Image (cartoon, rainbow, N blue to C red; front, side, top):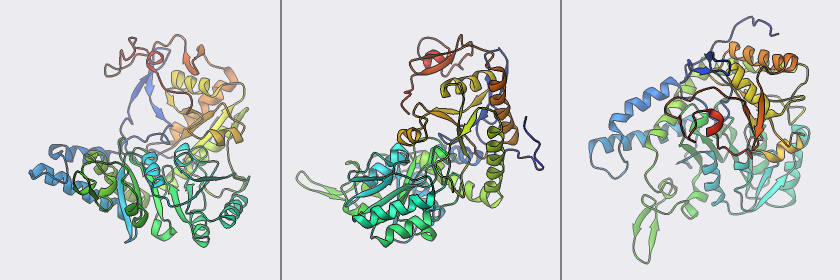
Length: 447
């Protein structure tokens, strides 16, 4: 079904799990094809190597006199410099380490001295935290959407415009430079949710004139548990600490507390040293990979995937705008006659392909796209290849032409093969008393 590329696209970089063998319901195994990078990207080899390098020195930071603690402290603060350089932070910017993008946005939400304007297409992490939220309904074109944002900003003063850099549902990229200029024209600052944009495109906030940027390590080819908020210091220094506790203070008495300035002000408690150092290593690796052509690699694969899926009868690709000039490697679709959960279960059980199905923590957007029950999302990354893309296109085509070869049933909103003979490895087996994947899944279908 798929055409042969003139220049084949092998994986651009080596990631953890690249040779993972997974069981299928027919008793065979195959190499896992990961199309869930937009949720969590596997760690780059450069990142796992940096973690292994730091582990012998792994210790608590900032207040330890021991050699290992001093090394860990230096590595942690060096990571702050690396991240600052990676995003082009300016002299008046602070880099605060958090747990993830959601954590970063909630932190900033407590610092905004006024209203925040957002779009209805946002991930819940950039829709729900803002205390004085004004929602602009996106139009069918980016140009008209920008005009609607301007109308909202001009009608009533706002402190902040908070927008996604790239949609986590469709991958479409917003005109950040234009939106930054627009926000500043009306006296507002701009926050970019970079969770989906930063792993795919360099975001230089100095060049773009962006005031705040948030992103996650786990989408940036580093392990879970570390995120970043970078931006202007004044709001962050004026706000109450995000968490009250050790490390966020200069001095404490029974009746008085003197809080530290940023970044310590918002980094109370023992930080995730390994996660932060891993995140910084990912930033360094991405700079090198981009220089070697990673963006062009992704664009070639994205085009192949979009064209291939669009050629399958009954498959519809989702888009927000009719004039979007660019998108990252995220392709979301529906298959006529099949629930999104059934499609995802079929791809996993019969083809060893991992996609994401559901509403992607963007319920208002899925509803306006006519997919209130959800869709299927396939997302690409540095470890993706044209062979992976072809497998997915062919598997979807087989589903449309021949139907599934196994039986699938829905239980509590979750689709599973019935029976599901695939075993779990020992590290996960028996989580619910039974070693089958369907018995141990406890995720919510709401996202």
